[in-house]
Image 1 (cartoon, one colour):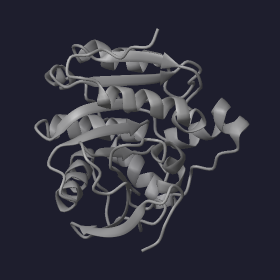
Image 2: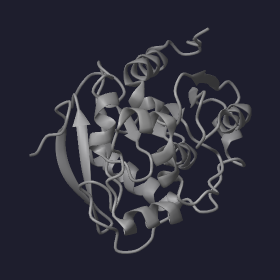
Image 3: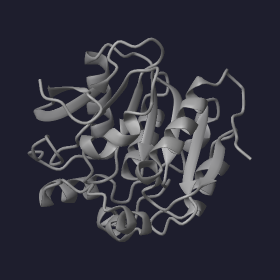
Image 4: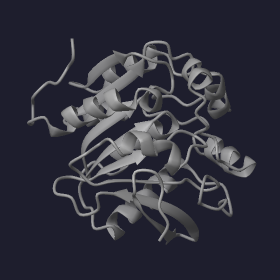
Length: 251
């Protein structure tokens, strides 16, 4: 079993004919496990600086087809199919109830999971994402993000086919008709104040559709979960650990 930064356990899962690399931090920790879904083309290693700081709970994530340690998919897939695949892995890991956090493309998939499996998600964290996916190539746009240029982070590890299938999976996708149904789901929306890829107005759309959702505009641009990993982890942990009905908004 190989290891990646932060010492997660790495395993491969074969689901519906697809081999996917899965990482788990603090396997078996008490409390509700957190699933993290990364941006387009980004792999487990890119998420490790953030996920390694989320202490006190089990964290798990995976490489999408054609990304990192997961081979290309044999055929294109849609968001509902990938949501079902992810939740099948959750079942195999023994997780019936989970918290879900998603960044950018992964934030859209996180919304899909919450809509498709409403009885399985306890809390939802959406970062630098949108309720409407209509911009092909958004993963490459992140390469010109201010924080990416300054930090030197390398997050793209996808094959050309992997990027193409991830883009196609969300082509024309929208959650807007369904988000009001999540009004009982505690939701935190974090958006970067200088994000030119997913401007804060997208977060405002999400928060306006989910009654009671908390919206915060935080320092950084599109890659703030990675370039501001410590602050982001602290904020996510506070939200996940808050008592039901408690607000953790930061002034």
